[in-house]
Image 1 (cartoon, rainbow, N blue to C red):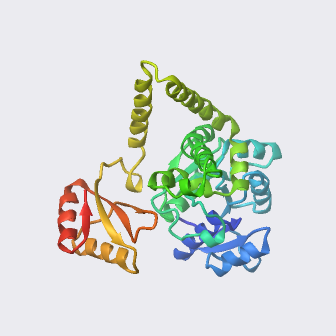
Image 2: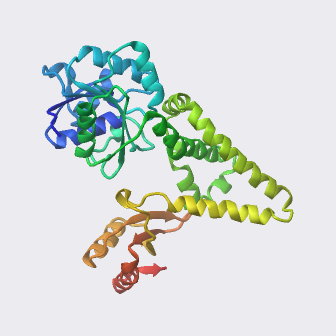
Image 3: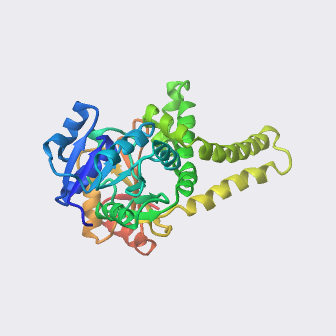
Length: 357
């Protein structure tokens, strides 16, 4: 990566996280945002310096603005900085490129991009320097983008630990509709069903409902903009999903002959789709061994568990935690490579842990 100065416009979660990551690499980062409070907070968190205090022109401008103003901000940056590359990190690419073409600005120095990283919390206070590590960063050049501009954006993405992949704008928007935008809708709809349940029913919530609804805590304004910007692709996925749901509802309505096969097929298709989700660091999916450990609800207990795993020389591939209502303990679901599952069980039992497989 040959970049010495990156200008970040927009100091929310993504912009501030990128600034933190680039500062780790000793890259000069200048920060701009319409909100003086937001940009000052990002500066105080160590994401860079206020733009007005950095005189040098940037090598790269990263626009991390809301989707409904992304194109306008990108156009302004292209006009102001005549020699640098400009990218944006909006989660929709086709509508941004179309709006940019309407402005008439030259697009040879523009390369769209989209880091597939985020959190259900928003704003600079949720930023993390390692947010992009091991995450896909989609580089989405337009027909006018120069090879040098594409290479620069790709290099910056790789430098902060992301795995760059290249897609055309239409391919990107169709893909994120299925793997990001519709899951947000489904999570919100499922969580919405909890609003009017009695407290005694909600208290029965287990890990399943937590997994399904985790992203339902997202920012409504941001997601309204995202869904509106990618409406055609999102609608296409939802139409297919609605047909599957209607088939399931019909099967449950009368349990006629063949209905149970419909229900079984629905779950089996989910198994197949879930198995295709990439594993750790984007690698091929791996079937892990799972060890369940009873962890006392007391300070330092989880730390001792991790330390005992480390002393045994066993790497943790994934982790889920679940607490029962009113229980003085939690269940840690440890995922490890199959070859070490039995040894992990033996090692933890020997160290006094209550273990189940």
